[in-house]
Length: 336
Image 1: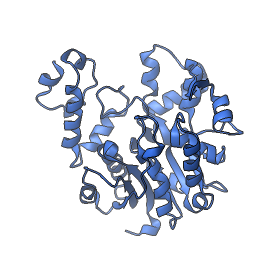
Image 2 (image 1 turned 120 degrees about the vertical axis):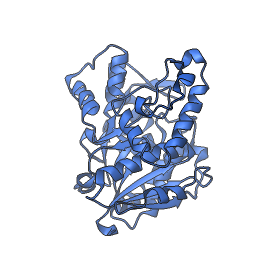
Image 3 (image 1 turned 180 degrees about the vertical axis):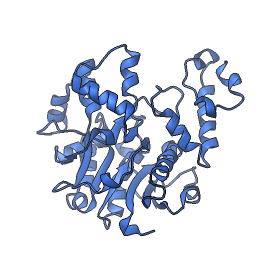
Image 4 (image 1 turned 60 degrees about the vertical axis):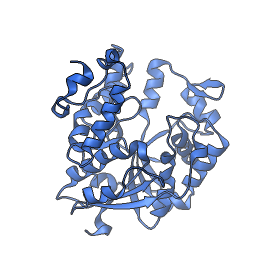
């Protein structure tokens, strides 16, 4: 493998997201097989029960090379709510470790790659240290549902939150789930350090490190095609409410994300590995990927454990593992 010609991808996770992240790596392998070399740089928690060495054994092949990094810093003091993990801050430490690379693509551990990343990796970023998709979900969901953003004892609309809480002078706000980073510019501008400092001085941020990155950049990022970060659950969100997006522009995005995601993002309420979460058009692809890895049984077992925490009556409303992968004893679990 020629590392200089490889596509460098960054992932970061702790035990909570280790198994789902294996589907991300498998999707990279499947999409780029026989076409491109991928180096996956993984920063993991220092106290993992998950055997990180098994990742190298599972994926080391002519397409994929795994590079492991152990997080040195503990970011627990930055976590204000259980929905967040300290591993979300590992990306900042990983970007410092990779400073000798020209660039890398960062992917959240809840994504699914469906398109070759070579064109994304070759993006002309000009003067920007970061390329990312605008957070259209944040923009339109707030507008369509008249939602407010909570912070401390107040609530804000999007514009006032960005201005008054994040100190931004623009409404250009990115989603941090998929990012292309010019590592030299990122580190020279100390974006990670400034983001962490902002989290320290502003506890309780609504979207934590993502808010902090947006504060640090203040809209100075290259905007990518929204298909590079497609929110998987969006169409179901409207279907469940028997509603339609209010604007034609948003309706186009909803349909595009649902049918032509280049990278599907299982954000918010769409986690295929959690039976309590909403179904998405990409759940089967997630399971197809994970079932081709040595980690499939472990994830199935975790899924069933979550199901068993619910009463027998509640289980009927839970999302089920796709039929082709359901265990033969599913009737005993789901009651059908």
